[in-house]
Image (cartoon, rainbow, N blue to C red; front, side):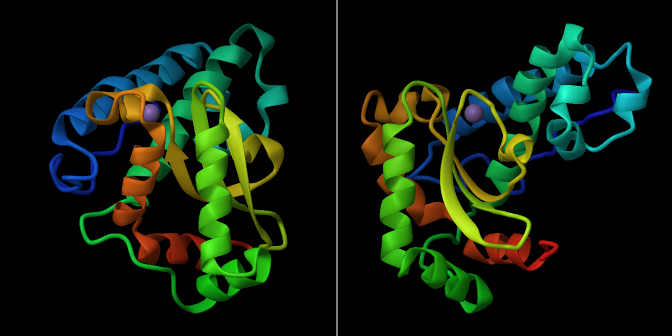
Amino acid sequence: MMAFQTPALPYAVDALEPYIDAKTMTVHHDGHHVAYTNNLNAALESYPDWQTKSAEDILRHLNDIPEAVRTAVRNNGGGFVNHNLFWTVMGPKGGGTPTGDLAKAIDSAFGSYDGFRDQFSKAAATRFGSGWAWLVADESGKLSVTSSANQDSPYSDGFTPILGLDVWEHAYYLKYQNKRADYISAWWNVVNWSQVAEYFAGLNK
Ligand code: MN
C-alpha cells in the first residue's frame, strides 16, 4: 500500500460549473493530483521513516529530507498537499464573504474583506508562470497573503495555508485559455468560506 493516497473530490466533477468546468476538474484531479501523489510515494519509497510522517510535516522539514530526493519531494509533496487543500476550499455553494472570527481576522490584517480580496487577486494575477496564491497564518494566527512558485508550499516557510488558488495553466487553460484574470474573478464564486473558517479555527494560536 502506498504511504500517501489521493483524496477523492468532495463533490461531483461538474459541481463547480460554470466557474470551473468538469473537464478541467477531471484532468486536474485524476491526472495532475494523482501524478503528484504517485511521484511523492516513489520518491520516498526507499525512506520508510519519512513515509510515516504527514506530508505537511515533511514540507516543514524539507532540509532534513535526503538530498537525493529533496527536489522530488519538494515538487511532488507540495503538489500533493497543495491540491488536498485546494479541493476542500471550493464548493458548489461557495462564494459570498467570510463571517465570524475569520472575518474579524481578515478585517484586522487587510482593513476590509475587499482589501483582502484585491491583495489576493493581485498575488494570483502577478505570480509569473506556474504557482499559487495563498492566505496563510503565522504561528500567532496572524493572516497574510503570499504567493509561491511551482508547487512550493507555505509550510516550508513556516506558515499554514488556509486558502489557496492554483494558477498553473492546467487549472484554467481549457476554459479560460490565456485569461487568467477571468479565472481568478470567477473562482471567488466557488470559495467555501465555511471550510476556510474551520481551518482558521483549527490553528494553534
Ligand atoms: Mn494544479
